[in-house]
Amino acid sequence: MRRLIVQALGSGPRVVLVHGSVAGGMGTWAAQRELSHRYTLEVVVRPGFPPNEPVDEASFEWDAPLVAEQLGDGAHLVGHSYGGVVSLLAAALRPDAVRSLTVIEPPCMKIAAGNPAVAELAAGGVRWWETGPRDPAAFLRGFLRSVGSDYDPPSPPPEAILQGARTLLVERYPWQADIPLDALAAAPFPKLGGSGAHGEPFDATCDVLEARLGAERAVVPGAGHSCQRAPGFNAVLADFLERAHAT
Image (cartoon, rainbow, N blue to C red; front, side, top):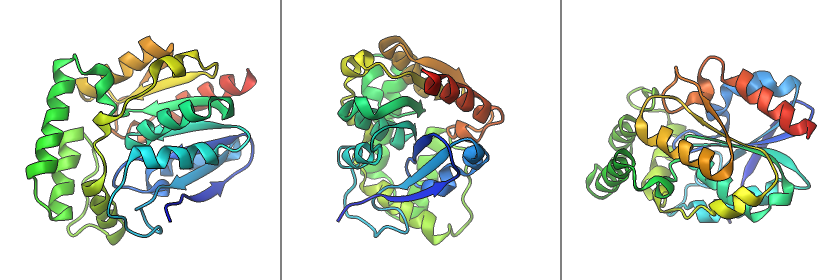
């Protein structure tokens, strides 16, 4: 059975945190622990990532309803990378339960397909998935280079990272996601798109979200694709959450 594992920290308004590919919940959101004195951080672990069992297939379409259900009677929603795609879809499923939506470098590149850099990254991703090595560690290293991640896993990688890499191998391509931009734009909750200024494709995708959703825009360099780890990101996120919660 596909399920989320949820690890809760702190007290205060609820913030549901959705990780992306490879790393699980606590690894992705380690830098956000310092916000637990102001918020209840509900760090979800998606199917296929430890301590969940391995999976043969993974998809944003399957994970989005699970995250939407986790919102309960209302929570702020924050998603990184593949988890940002999941969060966009989850927010569209239950807009009345979303207090605010923050997405960090979501690879929903269909929305910016007219940009040559975006199209090139998506095409390169298809080539890597179709022709890249099947060894999880080797596949992971090429993937990390392609998305501009600053993470350099040890050799051999820890077992938890290897399981994440195996899940990555069977994930549905995130650039295939159809994001309901009009429905999200009509939803009243505040939106924020964050990127790390390390590559045009992710900046361009977040620019589309800013334009189409009326989202706030934050550019926080210093940690590549994982800009939630960059110096100053928590201040940006906390300010957004505070203003969103006040409304």
